[in-house]
Length: 500
Image (tube, rainbow, N blue to C red):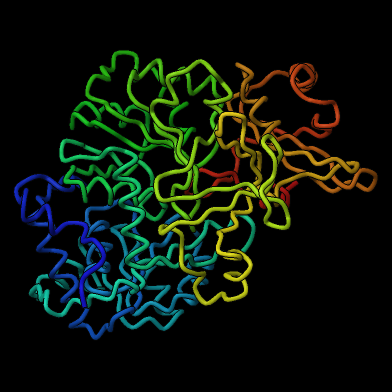
């Protein structure tokens, strides 16, 4: 059998062995050192009795070992299951029960939780990153093993990752990504981001999220990856200056925090080549401020756990004062075909809303052990995203809303995202979201939740009336200290509906 998938590290370990691959936890690993550790881990997992395809669950923050665990699973034929550290134990237990891992690896602050998860879900093997007390340490686990490349299987269809969805609308599902799918995701990002060995990429988003593929693309291209433990505007500026970083990934909330922070007033952005962002919409006016402030390339990705970045707003698209373009999700990423269709999977007309569907080699193969959900989502050869979008006259994709978030009030379809974007364009509104709540007369009523200090509702209503039809105006208003969000920064509207 001929190998038909990439290895994240081996090529650079041969061509640039002493180049720094990963910086995290105060440690700097070269490609040569990282390659050796990856080989040791693969061998150690085999020595522990794991067979090809066995699941390896990882509950950790952005720690030094994260990259090598995924790279070892890819190389040696195991399946990594990244776990969201923000989930509660019952939520994690559901994923453990569903994926049935042979081993759970716990991050430096997760040892007690992985022990409890292993005990309640009958997982036999538990190890911990960093110093450990009553569980085996990861360092000891790999130190006893010797890399054995002859034992690594070559099958390109071996599942290398199961990424569980964020569960914004219900129980999470495991999106299955095989070796070829991971290869495609890495190639898409390497090409679109123009990654190179000169890049120093700062990964501020959690590695259990699809932004991990940006990290893998940078690593595969020979760049250096910096993995900070947390994000604040102050720490961001300090890391960018200290490491002379050339690129980073943020969500829009982080971008807004940065440009509003005194920390960036004296920041010299001359080293920055690229800021990648995604996860939620960003008001075009805020995006324009960020572009003007950092004077570097901006690159937006629209995608989901099941697909990766399927549509991109490229750097050249950001060099404009056209807010319609800046408010779009761009055009198809390389290797992707993206369409907007009606309920019969027929293309809709330009400017007409419909469901966004896509296909390409980076799309998941199935939902883990969910044949019904797989059939419903991957139908007629296309991944059905559940997002409502439209194409404008210039071919840019605009995401209107999630199909499940659409509000039906008095027989009219109302898309919360439209109302949110206009509200967020108000200079005194920093955070707001819109949902539909049940109403005996109208079916649902438009409901707005505000965060922080904002003008009174009457002023906001007058502002909205200048931009949208009267039937789209919020009829109920609430104020909260903060919005519930998942790890990707998306507002958990199902929780808000339950609360309100």
